[in-house]
Image 1 (tube, helix red, strand yellow):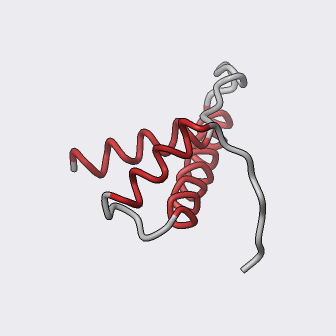
Image 2 (image 1 turned 90 degrees about the vertical axis):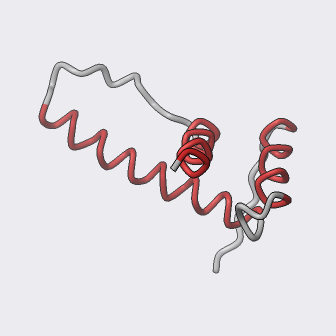
Image 3 (image 1 turned 45 degrees about the horizontal axis):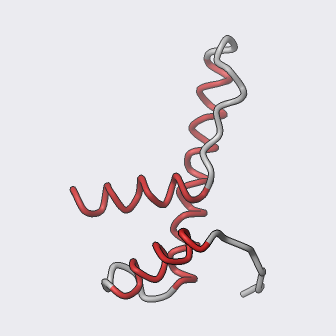
Length: 78
């Protein structure tokens, strides 16, 4: 698997550690892979929506931290 180095904020690192420490994820890498999968899925849905509605603003973007937070909330609340 390719290795990539990224920089994240201390708050993001703490949330990632919390997710691993709680047993929600096996590793930080798993957290990042889950966030990236959500990002890709969201980007695909967004692209489809934009093609269907040409008047939608192009400036709406979710970052990985926002996707992770949404995913964590969804996992906790079912």
